[in-house]
Length: 348
Image 1 (cartoon, helix red, strand yellow):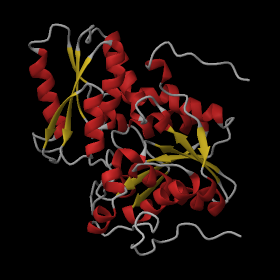
Image 2 (cartoon, one colour; image 1 turned 180 degrees about the horizontal axis):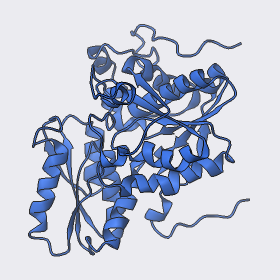
Image 3 (cartoon, helix red, strand yellow; image 1 turned 120 degrees about the horizontal axis):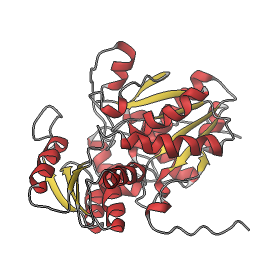
Image 4 (cartoon, helix red, strand yellow; image 1 turned 90 degrees about the vertical axis):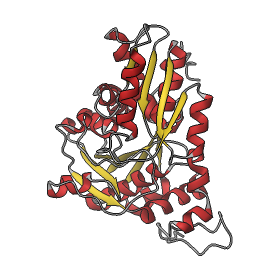
């Protein structure tokens, strides 16, 4: 039997997630499509890695002392990671979140001990956008907190992508024995895609962007201009500016993925492979399938299974919500629903 691993604390349990072969996606494309099971991190998302590195960087720089406070504007998962990792290290957390985000994530933030500040959803150019609001709040709190207050600033704090340069990329390389041809995922802050790319692209691995509708990066990397069209129910992804974590990065491939293409993968993975995943994972898997079909059979492609679907149950697995958005509803979720498009051909 393998040796038992004992983590000295929660932070040490972040990372080292397994790769899971996505059987039906692999069979349909003739490639090996692997999902990095980031939902198995302590905070149940890929954002635990960025949270850990942002906190460690602040401590190393002397900006955060015992009893200090971490402030962040986040769609939820980074906040959960900061709250849990921060709590394990003796820090307080204040999270600013758009009120449109799922109630499940808000409930988890409260359970993790974070003070939650909800604000109306506003575009980044608006001074009351959740990210910009959190920056002002951090500055105000710093005036009365001698233990130190940091604004985590996940979008422009490159400690975020450093986490993936040092952990995610090398883990993928080691787990595949260096036999990986492509890596693809969506962008929220840019840390996961770019950090992993910085570790793998120099080794000859092709890097792809899977961009949801309503985001601007697909347009930027294919035309040189940021332009947005449509929208997505996926939370925590979709970027309309070049963050510091994205600076210097160019993908080898870029795809724009509508929700109607991504959601059937989510439903299929839950029904046939036991994987209950969030909307961003659907965008990622759809992107991996597109990359596999462009590269051709025989390649190994890795994507990110970012978090659990239970974090979005009131939306993602709610037939009424899906119908209101004119999105597919699987028959097993609502027996009165029409059949959704089949993403994989039936096999004998």
